[in-house]
Amino acid sequence: KPDVMSDAFIYGVDLHSVEQVDEDTFRAKATWYTPYEYDDNSEEYYIPPEGKVAVYSYDVWQDFTFEWNRRGWWTVVDIELPQYEFLEMELVGTYEKPSLAF
Image 1 (cartoon, rainbow, N blue to C red):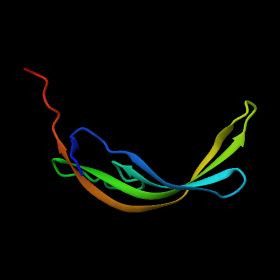
Image 2 (image 1 turned 135 degrees about the vertical axis):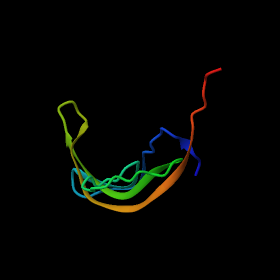
Image 3 (image 1 turned 180 degrees about the horizontal axis):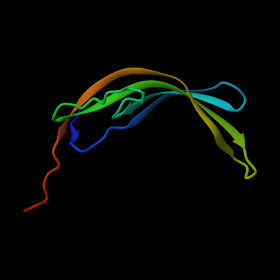
């Protein structure tokens, strides 16, 4: 994996599938990439070693419920996260932003 600037955070979503679970609800399965642990109940915060940033990945199942509105389109009225699973924490190398000073 390529290095990133030292003050960067890595976020991302890799959508795997979407399936209809009832008339107005769809379930998306995806992988999330975040610079922090999703579980905020953790009592410790991991500080990566110098020259690295942490990237946490999770498989997630997210439900989106839609409702037809007066304007004639579907609107998301509820989002739930019924399940998520921690996959791994990776360390990605960093580099310093080049100076623009002469």
